[in-house]
Length: 395
Image (tube, rainbow, N blue to C red; front, side, top):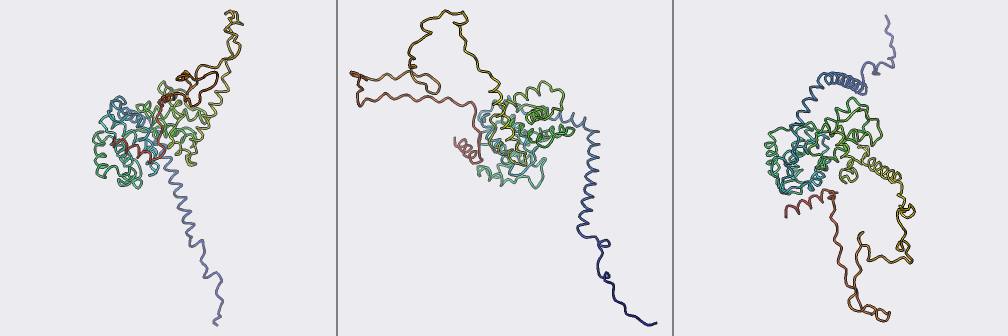
């Protein structure tokens, strides 16, 4: 049999994509597998939620009753006062944002801070140190390990006012004071439960978190239960964003918290306002500011001008000559800051024959005493907080 040389096939050395899958096909298969696993996990999580939600909520309510701070005990502190609270909250919010911690970490840190201040005497020079220890404990308790702040980083943020050993000692002292009872159902935890069955979008969630963080600055809400605060803030956020209310009724405590919280929205902290003005927070602070301006403008338009009351025309008073003055008289004195002040009596002869004496100087006025402000301004930067804290330590 004669051997006939044949030409090789053109496709003999070409690898087929069907026989050997490429990396893109492998990545696609992994992505499909992850999606299936996530869908299965969601189904199992929903089944577990429906089976244990009642027991979980009952346990959380018991925990929040046991971990509420005592406001009356904080009132009797000798050195730390309530006007210092906005400064420390601003610092904690900036540190929380710098380390990109979870929302519940901030609420847990503030809870640990308030619980410690209601059980121990705190000096004002240690107030910031207690806040840093509370943030460190909260981050270790529920946040990601790689995001837990280091002690040297906290020391740097405090401008090296404290040694590293002081952070460790304060952390141990806070834990020992609280009996190592760290777990606390925060506002964010209750909010996630409320949003689980509701069809609210992410803007409602961010607006609710913004309102609850505004409440952290005020003494009125320190002793409020997180479940009540979350429900009231969620209802208020839906009203601000003009979303339909899904809850049928509110109890008395929720209505009181909602009313009090609605009265604290006009002057938020500048640090907190900048935090929620970012696009990834849906710019809810800008939305709230526009809403308040619209409400103020609508209230001005709704109030009609009060007509003057004419008692003479109504026949209830007889006209007198004083009611019809001739030439308008100059008002007595001057208006200074809204108050009438008497004219200054010149010393000696001021006019001689109708001519002013040259070289005469009026007696100087006494300066008007400035009225104290009812609200303390918020810190606008971490540097201002450190300057304020150093002044307190030196004093």
